[in-house]
Image (cartoon, rainbow, N blue to C red; front, top):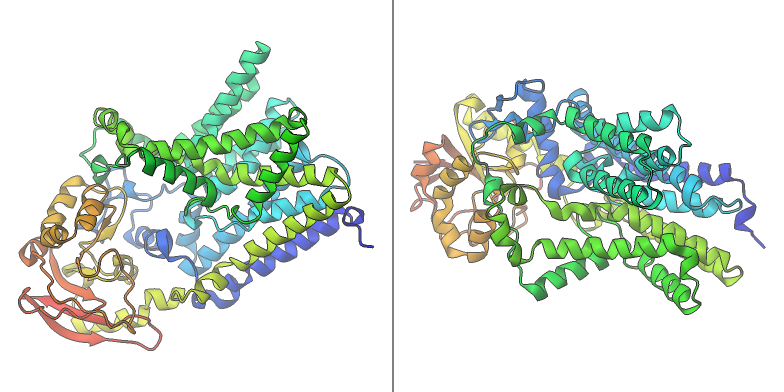
Length: 560
């Protein structure tokens, strides 16, 4: 009979490396024919890196602007030049840079979780299958790509901090704290992680009455590194700035029951930016473990497990509560509460869910017999599920366009050739299509997807789409209370920006303020669908463009 605990740890590690290589291989083998995430990825970040690269403002001053977007979007709207992913996209073509970033993140995620489990949570001999398996599962989670190591780097950071806290550290732990800020984001993960490290330090002080200066210094050191690498963000907070679209963020709109539903959804299903895929196998395992510990009155022997479960629940409660409308009077007087998303403490969930998963597997394993078999079954099921959620498998089956099909470089070259003018001499906007596609192809746009741009521009752009917003309360609230997607909206299209050439959708009553569009420099509209009343809306259809390697059909409209 096969015994999982008799294989050497190196054999499990070798198997894990092979699985990671297979998982990552479609990105390198297929290249631009690969299928990757569109939302908050191809529709935004990948294009932003390309814009920054081609703008000549990668190392630009604090007051620099990127002229290609909305007549000059602030340089500070993009990542700092100290961000590793920016340099990947500067040195390599976009798709290759994306593949390298995926590889770097997943490998470090695996190493970090493995070191953390081996040193602090699953130290027993004979449990290599659990250590390696849980670490591999964590590394296969479908994380938000541009987050880099913002969440998947947390286990490595926790390993370093716990070693420093326990006075068993050397230079390698400090090296980790030095390097991580160059490939992760402060505001999209580590500010919340460091807040909990600070809380842990304070709890230690309360319990032991000792300061543990090295632990405190390590927290300050890493925070300081983030302030240096993200100096543009620091200066934007310290120096007087004109209002941005973030000043009109209105997140606290939910009543009590809706906040509770959001809390339960977050706890049971997770969040798109920190997908943990814990619902089907991890959560049932943890519930069974917790039930058995309580039933047998052994929970005091597994306090770490119980405390982490409580913390996991509290993070979801906080997430749901952040959007409760009772916050609004406070947020109205404290601008930071409107411009910074404090709900993101739940970005700690990937670390916590997979730590709990590993500990839960260990508790099952310790039960012997059926417990060992159950632990292996749950581990295999979770790994299988995560492997099938590989981007290539997931998005190809779902019918999403490939990288090449999405950006459709050849199609937009045809449009550029037809227009026959320098792209910087006119401005375009997209309808039923993400403006990131036009931007990726070098066109100068009056529309954008960005979470940081001048509020004055948002108001000027709004005048173009005001009548369409009035037709749809949902679109009106979406734009007025957020506005990150500064798009040409049509009430007939709604919040859909991916009408492919096979679509039969048409717009019958488009009402745009074309004069306001022209005042912003707008001259052409790239529409993914035909506009039947184009003439009445002061638009002229110039030509329809298609390409066999593109999923789009572009109706080129020119203003009259």
